[in-house]
Image 1 (cartoon, one colour):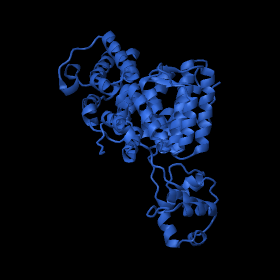
Image 2 (cartoon, rainbow, N blue to C red):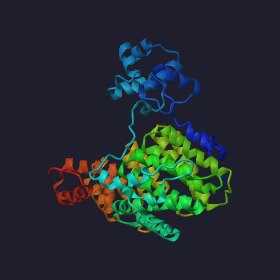
Image 3 (cartoon, helix red, strand yellow):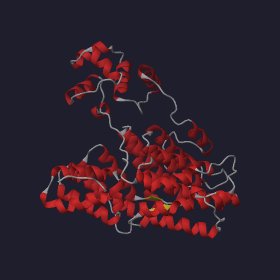
Image 4 (tube, rainbow, N blue to C red):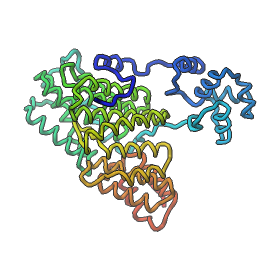
Length: 453
């Protein structure tokens, strides 16, 4: 049986979960009181956490402020978000007064996002047009002979040709050293062809090709920082799936949607969506390796959301559930472009540790994680970039430069679009190590960053 955390959703609840993703908005004390009633703190700001905790103990602002050694007005500004906790001494004292076990709950941690890079707009312009220019209403499309990027005329493609082009695109994303630019060049026509085939046949094969092309779009767009469009195309993939399709098809689409939410900073919604996948698959045949793979992959996405909340206990619980699935799956496997196994768990642990600036933990996990040449290019690049960021955080310039060079061997374009690679290179530029000058200059050029020496 699948190791499913409590609170997961059934197959019939998935649509409901999709429709209720964090549309409520609470302000100040009203939001804090809502959290008190539900005993939850996900998504609250530092000020709201302080107010929540103070109200739980029935303490006035004046009492708490006096115990911390500040004014009542200062605490009011902190709780309303108009002032920040400006020293570690104040953070520690406030955590002690309010009996907050982990003082890091009083430190805002912005979600790490992929920053816009030079040329991103040019890279994805045609893809955006292919995604947005062809609305579908009630399963009916615009006339097929006017379909295609820039409105050009196009013949209906053969199903075999569409599937072959789609398979080539999936292989490019997994293995090419120029996976971003090559996929961006091919994918718009594949999306258009897959949509036309889906409209023409209205069968499972046509829908599946369209869903897979949408999922490739989501991966590329997330990688380049186009998070809004990534969410749109992930949502379209979910909408394309039908109830009669296999559960794994819907689960894979929901996984992509959860990832899009994660990179948009919608952590609570991402967590809920990822656990909906586990609930969906808990009703299916648990002997299926694909179900175990997707369930484990969903736990990893939920763990990242929990870690960013931050809720370290929930993140650890989800990582344990993922390991449970990996142990029974045996080895690294993939389905529908989603990889899972011990290596992916190690990478997730590294990225979570990097998010809390625990650089020693990143290096320790990296030493235990096997990322060989047989792994997909993007996975290898992620591993080396996370390792480089940890070395840079420990002021080990040589280790950081070497790890970035290894990432460039796997996929040089990942240096251009990965935010951790950018931050690491900027640190190396600031340190100005003369022995690494030539190596860093080459990496900066690959990342398309402007640097002064």
